Amino acid sequence: MPSVKISASILNSDLSCLAGEVKKISDNGIEYVHVDVMDGEFVDNITYGSAVQKSFAPHTSAKLDTHLMVMHPQKQVKLFAEAGSDIITFHIESDCDADALIDEIHSLGVKAGVAVKPNTPVETVLPFIEKADMILVMTVEPGYGGQGFIPETLEKIRAVREAAEKQGRDIDIQVDGGINTETAKLVKEAGANVLVAGTFLFRAENMKAAADSMR
Ligand code: DX5
Ligand code: ZN
Image (cartoon, rainbow, N blue to C red; front, side, top):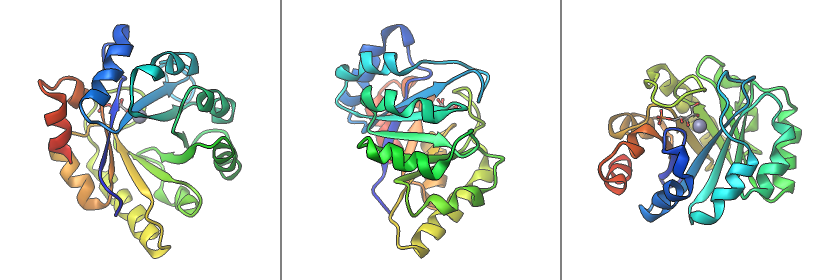
């Protein structure tokens, strides 16, 4: 299994001070800034576009982990690649040709992730283990931070890790939603290695200690 990495979601950070918040992430030794892009169509909520990511990118040395919760991700990938994304993850439930989109993300020099919502069968993403760099198993219904972890998703994490091992693919498996010290233990045991946390990290007294407690 690949090494454990932490990705801090800025969704529940102080959005009026994003430069400072993303700097805080890298200052505390966290590998990724998790950028939750929502379009009001794929999910009800609307957050931020590539212009906002481009503006805060120079203020962090962490890699940018862009999570597209949008209906038409093919319209966004070039914009976010130009806005500094190191990895772009789109949803298998969105309106796109997943295979072609992975190729396009790779052609932009960016890693490609494929995400699956809690109620979507894990079989929908298994075919992409071969080509994608990361599979994101959502551990909450996408749309908002601060929700409760859905334990039924553990089985899906196990299924992705087993399929990857059968294919000899040491792929990253990301989890996202309700991750803290306790749930981090469960998801790592199931095979996840990239742990997204928003509320847990930004509410912590000591962000570095909180992140290290997840590792
Ligand atoms: C939810 C987002 C998550 C969320 C995680 O749609 O994809 O990244 O911000 O937030 P917490 O860690 O607060 O559950
Ligand atoms: Zn996310």
